[in-house]
Amino acid sequence: MATKGKSTSQPGDPLDVEALLAGDGAAFEQLVRQESPRLFRVINRVVNDEDEAASLMQETFLQAYQRLDTFRGEAKFTTWLYAIGINLARGSLRKSRRLSPLDEAAVERMQPEFSGGMYVDHAETWNPHRLAELSQRRELVHQAIAQLPEDYRVVVTLRDIEEIRTEEVARMLDVSNGAVRVRLHRARQALRKLLDSHISN
Amino acid sequence: MKKHLMRMAAPMIRRLMGTPSCQEVNSFLMDYVDETLDAETSERYRKHLGRCGTCTSYLEQYQDTIKLARECRDSELPSDLVEHTLAFLKDRGVTS
Image (cartoon, rainbow over all chains, first blue to last red; front, top):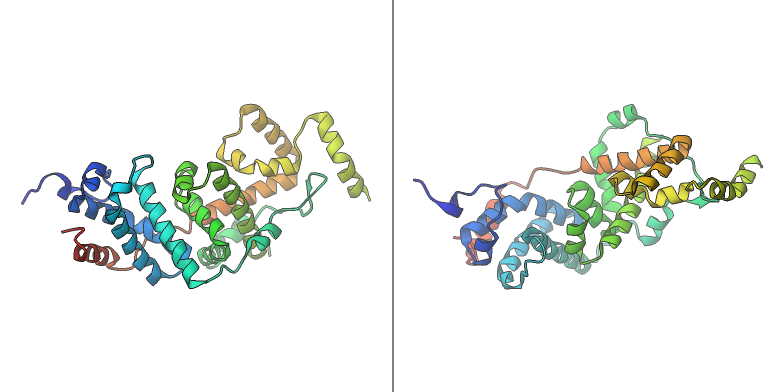
């Protein structure tokens, strides 16, 4: 039987924000179908625990629904949704007291050193064949990202893995664009250092 | 000894030639990669990269790091998570 309007929408269709704000169940179902994969990936990167991430994602959708009246339309609806999810994930991480293997001082140590404006250590281009043949490359990168402190892990996830624009990431994290860029640069350099020890050998 | 002297002299030579140092190039690496540098600065960087093997290698590693992170995007959700989420929301009166 043919149905009309929102109930026939497919994942990937633009979200009907008006219907969402009016509390339309079908529009909310579309939101869940469309955003679950990415939202789950983002939350899971923060908490590093699939069961916890699944539960937090459900809570994110519920809180979004309950707080629809606080959406001001200054950001995209999905940006607002992700801000809720990331906050919940960070809260959960704080409660669990699970610390990242690396801290801020370790990230600092992994930044390049300069003397007289020149690099102290000489970098060698990674051999593309070695890169291609590196077994369990994805797992290696996964683990390297998981070691980063939360602030850095989040920006790498949002900017480099999910390819979300800096302005949107800044809104999601409630920080300036400049802060996102500084963290991302430091995170990339720390990751580079972590990966270099496996790739350059 | 020669290396040490080069490091001492490098800042002065750069000032005279108006070229950025490796450290300056590093601090704007992200802008360079994102192509958000103005044309003039970008050209100065390109010139530096053209004759600095270390900066070129570092830039390539930096770009490879971004590519490797990008490859980490999983596409699979735990099975039934969407349906469980919809059921969870239905129980709470969100979806029908």
